[in-house]
Image (cartoon, helix red, strand yellow):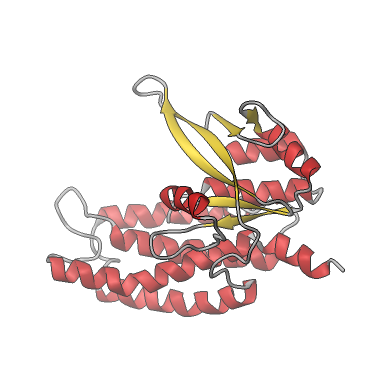
Length: 268
């Protein structure tokens, strides 16, 4: 969970565009990020893949009112609403975007291209039909914030018990990398998002970072970040951290979806 989800960028900046807070080219630039190119395939009214700017404009013309993030993993279809075909693709990618106002969803397929030493990512978003139904297990922003406070305490206690903080230079480097990303955290959510959503996302990313560090396999001398040395201890660590990781993912979804939720409440 240390990496930013492409579906999160598409949700945030797509919502900013649809709400009038961002220009099309600016939104497309932020969604693409460090990738080489993003294109959208199987979009209604288009015979082939198109660029992000055209795709977002097409969705708006078709009646899209917002975008919602889904971060499913096996056993937890977070943010999904069906049908099974879409859910299966989203589960494989462990991320997806659902279009509010239209029975459509987008799932990224990532391809690596270029010579060795200069490899870049190209992303193709598959546009697929979805079921217009409540998304699975998505909390409200206030609920997510309350859950995160407890999850952060739990994660800290577990990592302290596993001696993560003193387990070597690799864990420390991971923590420093997280802190550097946190300094840029306010760039993740696009203009128009409420401050509370930014706060919840930053805390969710912090909890996710702690969990990810605990799962790291170890450093060059064979020392594990979590200090687990047996299969039983590794299993116990995973069991202790799984609920915390689940809470952090739920909170991320709530934060990215906050603009759509807020607009829905205001709509007569």
